[in-house]
Amino acid sequence: MEPLILNGSKVATDVKEQLKIRVEALKEQGVTPCLATVLVGDDPSSATYVKMKGNACAKIGMESRKIHLPSETTTEELLDVLDELNDDATVHGILLQHPVPSQIDERAAFERISIEKDVDGVTSHGFGQNALGFGEFPSCTPAAIMEIIDYYNVDPQGKHAVVVGRSPILGKPVSMMLLNRNATVTTCHSYTENLPALVADADIVVAAVGKPNFIQGDWLKEGAIVLDAGYNPGNVGDIDYESCYAKASAITPVPGGVGPVTISMLLKQTVDAAEKYGKTNS
Image (cartoon, rainbow, N blue to C red; front, side):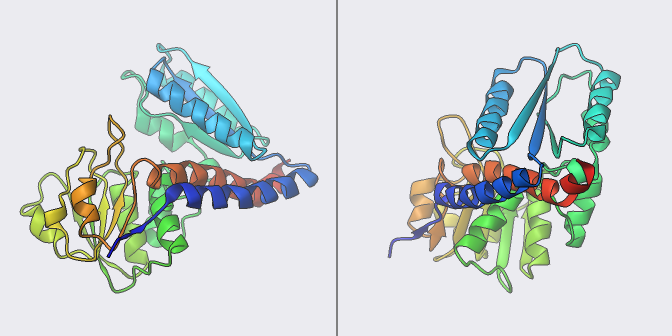
């Protein structure tokens, strides 16, 4: 039997159609949801990502404010810019594009973002709230994974979820989100022993390791649900798609899986912030 394709492009389109309605309603109340993106330096990939986010904002009627700082910017100068954005009532979400140049204390910069505007889920405050189950703005890729499983009525309750990867903006928060939805969660990483055996016990596999074609189909339990959060050169994910396709009951493609939904979650969380905080701040 062919697996169900978890079509992230379709999920993202539906999310954005709903957001257009919400944005229009906010504009009628005098509030235009605004995402400020801060780019430090001239990394071409980062510039492309910022441009994509700006285009996505425009398509649903949001404002995108781009702040481009020179490569030699200091931590203190970046913090001053973030303070200005925190104090600007017309800005509802702040995204600091990763990575920043090496002389900048990236963690200090992330922490400076106001919790009400941390729509990318990068502060330790936001991480803690998410882990405890009441975070408003989780990291966008974990939020995308949860959006996909909800869209396709995948209930994690009682299932064994294996998350391969433990990054602070992906593996760790999605593990917490699945745990909060009553899954039994195993989080694996580079020191995990006998990884294939752990994956073989999983009802749900989240690939978040950053290695192309890493997870193999012969590791999977028959009928596993596979969510590939990887995106590597050559448009390949973290799973070996063909071999995993043969074993899975549901699977995300790359591209067109988790990626499009990640951007739509960034937009959604900015609109959420505008709805919650924009009316009183404008």
